[in-house]
Length: 159
Length: 274
Length: 103
Image 1 (cartoon, helix red, strand yellow):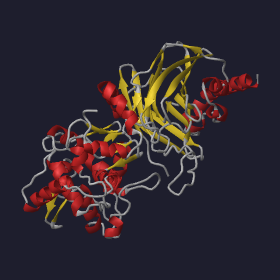
Image 2 (cartoon, rainbow over the protein chains, first blue to last red; image 1 turned 135 degrees about the horizontal axis):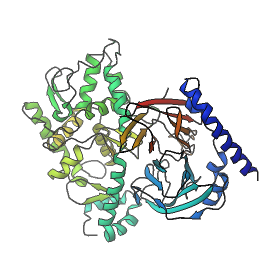
Image 3 (cartoon, each protein chain N blue to C red; image 1 turned 90 degrees about the vertical axis):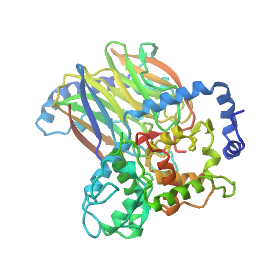
Image 4 (tube, rainbow over the protein chains, first blue to last red; image 1 turned 30 degrees about the vertical axis):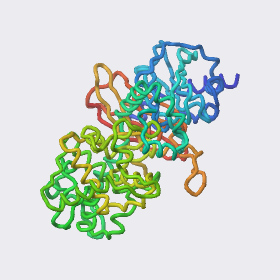
């Protein structure tokens, strides 16, 4: 219950903040980098899809195939740099999160997609070993998940 | 196992993971190579090497050192201050130094003679690690980026250039060290690999061209931009040879041999590698 | 003092495609250095991209984003000549904002 209220407060705060905020940013009074809420420690410490979704304040995600993985490779020559591209085809996508199942903490990144921005992000993640990689999509308040395996020939966490 | 030769097998014994990887490779080698190529291509756009290039360009133009001058009058082989295309003609004999120099040796020379740095300072930290930056790597990244697309054109007109080439060739085939390795042990047959890293056959033109024209590179496994001097230094380490001194005559000789063998190919670095 | 980001923002069709390279160690806090000492965690936690005062992307990152992070996204509503800002804040509170002109 608390998580839901927290998310709602955060959403309201961000919603109203953006309009006044935009004004301040344009006037050069505030730097855009202060726009965000606190780093989600719970989500970034969680392991596995279920725990990460919980940390993000959501309910169990529905498996989906409406996600395109773009140029995400099936094999990574080195786990230190694994390119992951996720495009959500689900309408009203609000956020895209990328999880590496077997990493010590599964959540690598969580992107918030404002209106006007394509639900399509690319980045590079570290993978300690061959693992399932999940794209967690939040659309219209609900969570969806698409998964694929990426093989890693050499673990990338410090070797 | 038909593709394995004695040399590669010895190399394989040095790393325990090899035998497991070997079985998979023999069965599905081509498919795996294709998938790894996809990985490499996915990395091609957005090369962190650009961060080093930007830093190097700044460093090239910055007034620094005891003489408080920039490097902009340094002659990299095409005349004072000319950076564009210079990497494609190196290594080269420089009269003002009386020796053949590769890019990194030339950078050291200019930092000493133009900026007044001591030899120790000019050669300090040639390869960076984490938060310890290397000026050399930044300068190499910038200077080589200005030769992208240029055809390799290493001349051998001066007798010292030929001398270095011949020395480099001899070194390439010279077996030594505790494992009796030479560069040729790993790099003189087509289709060899160590783990899943394919080994270019440096005695074959196409492989030799591709290998030389893709260094320097952002080496993902290092998290750093690595230069050709680094590559040679690391090869020596892997062969358990004594350390290859940075910008030494030995390092320039091998570079001369390998660069000259890449002539005609388009230079394509800084690239990104595993 | 961190290094500048490399930001490329290009109009392609009716979208602006943004490609960013950031200079950051993205240390996980799990690695040990050559002396055996654990290297402390040091990674970007928040990323924001804005155009004309509007946030066009925001993200929270963990230490598993690769060193020298790369980010690509695209949005509508910008034209050549507009400015795009990208900012990051890391777990030590260090921050950086860089700006690029959309071309």
